[in-house]
Amino acid sequence: MSDRPRILVTGFGPFPGAPYNPTQALVERLLRLRRPAFADVDISSHIFPVTYKAVDLELPQALAKYRPQALLMFGLAGRTAHLRIESRARNAVTLLWPDAAQTRVRKGSIGLGPDAMRFGPHTLRLLRAALGTGIDARPSRDAGSYLCNYLSWRAIEAASTDDHLRLASFVHIPPLARGGASRRKGHARITLEGLVDAGEAMLLEMVTLARQAARTSTRD
Image 1: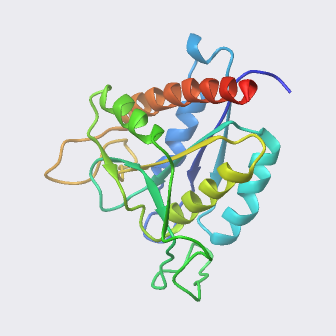
Image 2: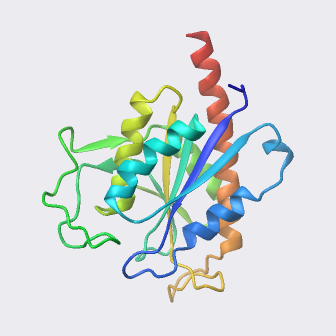
């Protein structure tokens, strides 16, 4: 296995109420970046169908395939006009809305365990990185109770048990029109280009964090 940092970047496909999910376009753009800082970095991607079954099946498969040291996840927040850097996942699942396969959960919690689990202090570094690009980015303690929160919970679990994964972070982005601009009236426009710039900054920060985690693991 190479000593190159390995980062997995993920998004979601469409789901009821969101026939166009801009996280997919964002992930595709980030994977096409060609920067000297990424020359010795293995960056891979995965787009999850918006179903609980897909997350449970495909997250372990992606971690086994790519063996990432860091996981940078993006999801769509349809009622938010800014970038949200999530600091935690809640042990909660909505009983109101089915997933894209029309599956409804039967209980309001993900499983046994605490009420919430935190990603870690590195989320503040991602926030600063995003803000440095001029985008409207804010911290968030509530990832909702749908698939974004569910994936966040499973990723935090994986970071504590997987042999390679050390860091995970989740970022909510606002809805964009297919032309690439935010659709929320009365707010500063966020474009796909702006999201790519912020995504690149956060990706660079994740690379730095992955290197630091690797050095710490080697010393241990």
